[in-house]
Structure formats: C-alpha cells, structure tokens
Image (cartoon, rainbow, N blue to C red; front, top):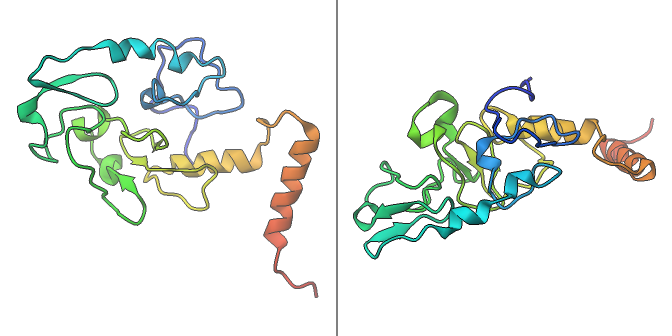
Length: 186
C-alpha cells in the first residue's frame, strides 16, 4: 500500500487544504485547470504564466507558457523540450491503457521528473507517468506506482468528503448492493 501523505509533494502552497484528500499535491497539479486545494490556491495566478510572449521564430508550449526555438519543434520524441511535451507528437506507451511514460517508476530523468500532462483531464501518477482522460474512482489501476488505486480506495472507503449524512449512507448502500448484485441467495 502506498503512503498517500508522502512522496512528491508540492510544498510551496502552504495554505493548500485538500480537505479529506490525503494524497500529496503533486507539482503537476498546480495550474492544471483543475482545483485541487479547497481554496483554489493551486489555480491562482496561473494567468501570469500565459502572458509570456514568444518571438516570431519560437514555438509557445501549451501549458506553462515556455518558448522554444522552432527548430526544436517536432525534432524527436526522445528530445522533448516543453514541460507538457506539446512540441512532440503524443506517444502512448501502452495504447490500451492510455498511459504516458509508464516506465517512470524506474526512471528519474527529464522525461519523467520534469514533465506535465498536456491534457486537462489527465491524472498525474506523481512520478511523471499520467493517465489520459481518467475518471476517478477507476475500476482498475493504471499508474505503475498505484497512486490512482490509492485515490480510488480512499474515495470508496472513507466517504469523509461527502458532507451530507443521507448522501453518504446512500452511496455506501449503493456500493454494498452492487457488490452483492447477481449473487444467488442459497
């Protein structure tokens, strides 16, 4: 089981309250167009990143606003220059899983440590790998380090994030009933 309170944690947002969410705020979750801190602190001031103006012979990366020379654009999937890899064609390591950088659990290079996902609905695994178009809770785990599994486990066992007691009980009953659905009473 993964320790969800340690790991790659972004510590520069001191007032980030994730509520009942015990997963660390990964730096890739800052300015990713999804509010992860209850007060929205992880999405504040992000528009300042968008003010970067590239000169005529530069390519502007999608997220983060970096500028790279046009000669680095589409030069090689092995030579990614933008943090979000928007300068190179998308490459799925395991196409059926929609997983990118699935070997990052064993690699500590720019390819993994200094990368963000380029898609708004992607789920960062916390080590450079990310899952595209993820919906949590997920019926199976895709992150090599099982960060998505831990989030699913927390969502389906704690219920602390549901404030209304009636709603919490309804979800608990629905989950319990779905486990026994299709079983024949003997």
